Image (cartoon, rainbow, N blue to C red; front, side):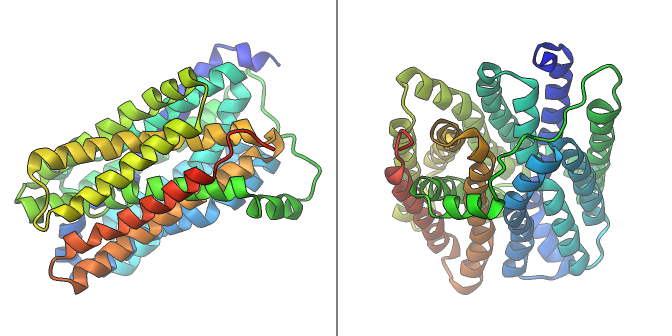
Length: 402
């Protein structure tokens, strides 16, 4: 009861979010060295697309199981182990000498990465009251975008300074240290109440899963997240930097700076869209608007065979990033329309939709690049289709649970 009034909860908040920043950065950082990997390991664009997708595939597949495990055994252990696994995987990635090692390293990283969001939400929900939690979960969303931002110009500069292997080795070591610090803060820190495992409904997990999988509202949220996350995360994390370099003749630093505009848009969009939704007292209307913006942005790429003018490209990336910030409304809808006993599973299910699209897009985009002369032009059809699926999903949402 007292932990929600303890000053120590801010130490918990800061340590968990710092770990989230670093893990978010390593999630998209491999996209900065796509061309170097293709040269060093003599692999095709399709292979690189699969390498990028594998982490998201593992992450996606573990979202529902992780939610169930965290509910039953508590979030602390899984978050600590996840940070360390991600660190070890990143270190292995930096030392890899064969593409098999790279694949194994990204699988390990994906397992660790799968622990972060579900357990972060559970930890914050226990240490903060409902009003604080609603505000801080938006800050957590901003933190994820900040991590992606760190994986642009700052990490590109680190790659130039240390080489790609040295940069990833440094990131892996930092994540291992984060895991150790989380162990001290969440488990070993004296004189603060230990958080016991979650009080869960006595209803069987299989019954809850069946109800969620057949719920129109849950399926709608799955599609919403599918439409927003894949086009943004999948493209930013794999092909955005090569796109800037190959189509516009930019240097690596210039291309990563271009992508940074999109991340700044996302950084600003998450809190502002949440504030707009709160002021309106509505979720569906602003969510519908920003899904429409996303569809419009991706469709604009198809009007320019050789790529949009640079000023328009920058505008599009800012708008796509800003609209991506509306994905927090997925979890606001979960909280508003589902009972607390089901919100964790539904959140995991919706999050699965988002990262399923992030799994599919890089590999599909790589396949198009390998088989079409104007590969990037035709590749943009993929995020457009994904965003249309999201628009269908948001139209299926019911504002209040019936």
